[in-house]
Length: 346
Image 1: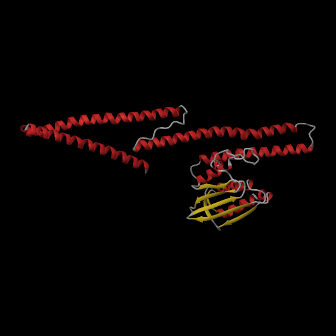
Image 2: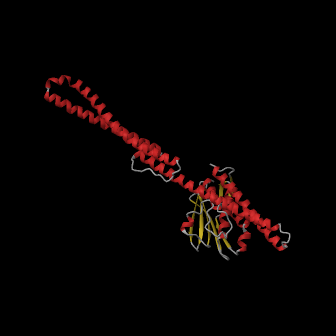
Image 3: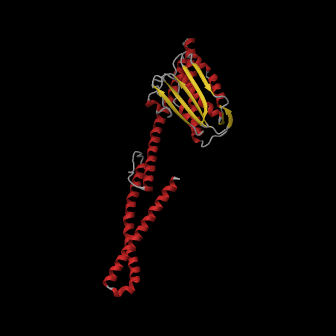
């Protein structure tokens, strides 16, 4: 629709310009003809011939002048775009084109600048991804290697052997989870549509996830309050949707305080399924909440909490695939609420 509107606008501009040129030319010819008729009345019989001749001459002059001015302006604009493309090809993604033009050219400049900004963010994300990726993989590998070397000591006590073996097991699990998450998010990014869709009940699925994570919330003596409409049917990928609730509830448990509470609410509003998972834990600052869906982002710089910063990125990708949205409402030291909206196609 936008392309068609821009094209129509450009066509209207060209048509109006040509009309004004012709109108001006006819007016000038008419004035000159009247002047000739006033000065030389005997030439009245040749007025038509002179008019046609002058019309052709003036049309050529005005057309040439207009084309020269018009296309000279376009040449400068094209030159600006070529400079911008050269900058982009040389890896400069901070270059911006002035958006002072009008009509279609302004739309092109805005789109070009938006593309440059996106490429710049992708470049920064790629650098951040490489840095965090290497750190996340290197840390457990170094840990496993170090404790495996300690286990080779024949004088090691049975207690130390058990402790070191436990650390190796946990670190290997961490490495395996990281690899699985990377494969999952790569698969999600390569998908354009949701495959293997079927009808299931979201309220029942959430209750299953609460039971699945029972060990974690019981360890922290957390109370989970569930308030759901019954039989909320949905048509989508059941396994992927389950991954959403697992990640979000796991985070809620992880960042809740001992003896805390978690609330899960789900309902159908305006043909959309709304699920809200709320904890009353450590919460987040505005700066942190603006980055939580980025890959490998971890607010806990001390890494006192388990995780690799991929969980919420996976959640976001799954929700996008299902044409839904997720927002977070959070206050530092008061807790966070994740609200998921899914279009109900059932």
